[in-house]
Amino acid sequence: MRYYPNPARGLDIARVNRAIEEAFAEHARGNVQMPPKLYITFEKGDFRTMPGYIPSLGIAGVKIVNVHPHNPERGLPTVMALTVVLDVQTGLPVAILNATDLTDLRTGAAGAVAAKYLAPRRTVKLGLVGSGRQARAQLMAIRRELDVREVLVWSRNRDKAEKFCDEMGREICRAEELDVVCDCDVLVTTTPSREPLVKDRWISGGTHINAIGADAPGKQELEPAILQRATVYVDDPAQAIHSGEVNVPIRRGLFAPGRIAGTLGEVVIGRKGRKSPDEITLFDSTGLAIQDLAIAAIASATADSVELPFP
Amino acid sequence: MRYYPNPARGLDIARVNRAIEEAFAEHARGNVQMPPKLYITFEKGDFRTMPGYIPSLGIAGVKIVNVHPHNPERGLPTVMALTVVLDVQTGLPVAILNATDLTDLRTGAAGAVAAKYLAPRRTVKLGLVGSGRQARAQLMAIRRELDVREVLVWSRNRDKAEKFCDEMGREICRAEELDVVCDCDVLVTTTPSREPLVKDRWISGGTHINAIGADAPGKQELEPAILQRATVYVDDPAQAIHSGEVNVPIRRGLFAPGRIAGTLGEVVIGRKGRKSPDEITLFDSTGLAIQDLAIAAIASATADSVELPFP
Image 1 (cartoon, rainbow over the protein chains, first blue to last red):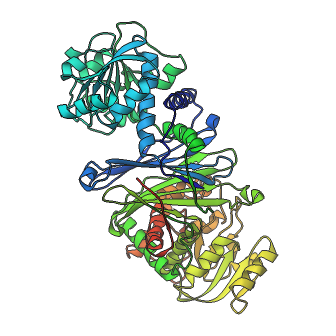
Image 2: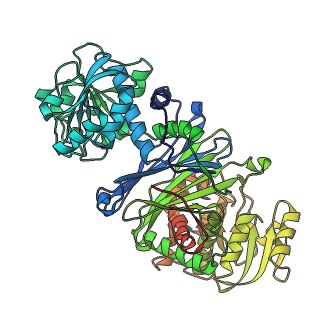
Image 3: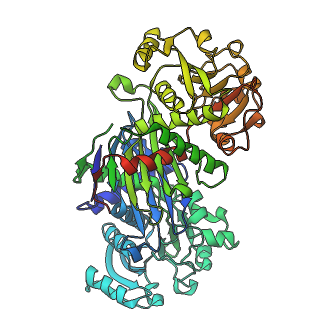
């Protein structure tokens, strides 16, 4: 059994995108096992247990990930994750990966796969609502799939948006007001908001939206009217209804679960897709165990690790 | 984050019994979180993901355990387990324990707690059906709770029963035919049988039975008529109905789920218990995540470990 303290270091993002794409395709083909995430709740946070098995990639295991919003006050990340990988033939635990950065990357990769298939064009203006770790991961991954000519960034704290652009390169990136950011080809929302930030009137026909931030009951970033105009794809219907961008509108009767157009996997295998240049498409991401396993498979093949005695 | 390669070494069995007893009591009081085990199935086995949280012990985490019956042909144990412990305040993974031996011990401890509360007397003749690792764990744990004067052991392979007695001490232990073994005060069954081994006519009034072996759909060790005569306690009703000793009789209409008398936790807190010296009592064990967490809590406090870099 090997422990991987920093398996995200040096990972080839394009390769991650392909592995995640294949995991979604296998999901759509019905070739994976993935029971629903289990939640344990604490006073100050929660953790989720996410087992899965992708036979075609020969990988099985469990991601364990917490969300403790007050952790930064203690100098710890809000979200921390471990992935345990088991040998499919014997059940032997073969790898334990520090999966905190991998979680960012695999979520970014899902956004990149969605943008690859659903963006209205190949050369795009990218709008980012939120400028944290996940905004960075989305940008890095989407750049491998599309020609990103311009990046507009909004953050509740303007300084953070400016700093983000300093890091990402001033030649393509600039901080803007929220309505300006929303006037783009591909919009990515990555905030922890519980109130809609993005107004319906700011979204033009043809926009593709990655709705990433909402990953728990009560969270939402978009005015429900946007969902009503859009063709809504999800990673997994049960998870999205429970905790995705659609969860609050569904609970309030502003969106019907039956209006979910399909899964990202169905888009990847060509069963579903953009039907016109004016269509608003939306990918509602909650995060799947099979994404964690797909990225663990490639990270554990190359990253540094230490041997641990087992059994 | 620390890794514990051999946390069962040197554990005080009496202390394990008390920790498991407290976990069951908290379960009965409704003070734990424990979603149902999740199963992932492979061609040659399966693995189970078992998250839980015991607030009173300040411990939360996940056990991951496989069952691959053909592993011994490859020189690996059939069952191997890891437990990941998270800090309740921050969600930080603080400990990873090799939980293979701990799994034996915590199951033995549950049997000891059941025997402590349900055995017809304090000085007992113990019957063991099966002579493997779990038979050993049950004997070691029960000896801390009851005065075990005599141990009768049956194994399909007589040599194994003889070898078991060599290890456990010839002064109290002897190999016997199955019907003789069943004539005892406390009977413990630990085989992987899928057909009833123990006949109804061999079980006298007053016997307490720990039915340990059945832990998956299709497994059973006892003639259903025994369950019909006995007062049946379980660790967790949903798990027992799914995969405990009662699972096959329930599926065949030979035992009604409503006949389950209660949980071991209810027995521990005094809400339920033996009502007469002639009553046949039975504890149907499937194994709970909270047992794994309770033993992880005491093992990680004392066992040797190595530091792993995280986050």
